[in-house]
Image 1 (cartoon, helix red, strand yellow):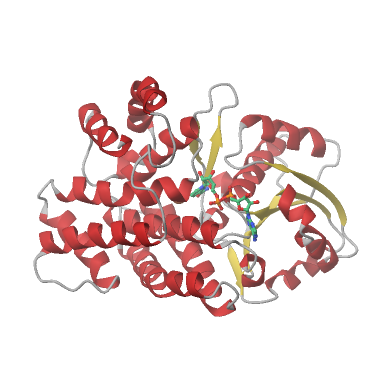
Image 2: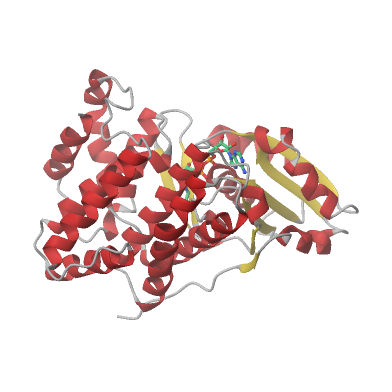
Length: 372
Ligand SMILES: NC(=O)c1ccc[n+]([C@@H]2O[C@H](COP(=O)([O-])OP(=O)(O)OC[C@H]3O[C@@H](n4cnc5c(N)ncnc54)[C@H](O)[C@@H]3O)[C@@H](O)[C@H]2O)c1
Ligand SMILES: [Fe+2]
């Protein structure tokens, strides 16, 4: 069967990557970001990089952006008619900017708006993906939208912008990168191109995430994590993801827990679940991931067990809870949402590329395990 590897946006990387914004000097530029990016002066430093551009800033993105945020952004920019939208922030700002961009293009009847994504966390990879995860304001459900129209035109990876990410957010987002890369390798649609990027990303996370934790102010580990995040995004944009993300979207929409933390908690559980299928192909894929994390054992099934154990240990070291009750969620709240979570997981686009097709009772069983 013929496959497709999306040609990726132009990627500018390294310190001072934002200087490339100078070319926007004569343009009308809309910046989509959150309150922290405005108050911390990061938005202002972007504006300084293009002093002659006409700029309008929407700084109201909230974590896990919903449709109300998109509507507010569209309302602000409708008459401004930007040539370019700059998405500045974590995955939430990047995804909100994508939603605003396609809605405006629709309003302007197809007139294209350039989208430049500047991630300030090393996590979502949204700067190079055709995904936008948007919540429904009426019921809180999270939907991963997928369309080539959501792919940014350029991505700017400036490691200086991530230096202020606190350790807990760096760990959560780093675990999101690891999950993207492992799910990309394990996906039913993995291919040589996605593997090349995902395998490198796993190696970079295994090497540099501990260094970020050890020394938050060192730029080099931050730079490698930023690149790893982008590579993992390119990988899963081609291969798709898996059941960790399918369940994480379902749970995250209802329980409002950081995306990276839910992934970290689910990842070892789903590796075990997929590994228990006994498929040698799946076991070997995980064995490849294990080797990249310096777990070198000959038996594929043992490698899978050691991989999930290593991730559980990593979670413990980083104080990532192992269950929803440890997260402080009330058992009765999760129970009340059980059926909704199962249905949302089965319907999620990421679940489709999981290497083992889950049934409703499989998800029910996994949910029981993580309630704690
Ligand atoms: N589109 C995709 O391909 C894709 C993939 C994975 C996840 N996501 C989505 O991305 C979102 C998660 O993104 P995220 O993990 O980057 O978190 P986020 O964007 O929600 O940001 C988390 C927090 O970190 C803060 N922050 C961001 N940059 C900072 C910096 N440089 N210094 C200090 N604080 C900073 C933000 O203000 C916010 O409070 C979720 O909604 C998830 O579903 C999207
Ligand atoms: Fe993710």
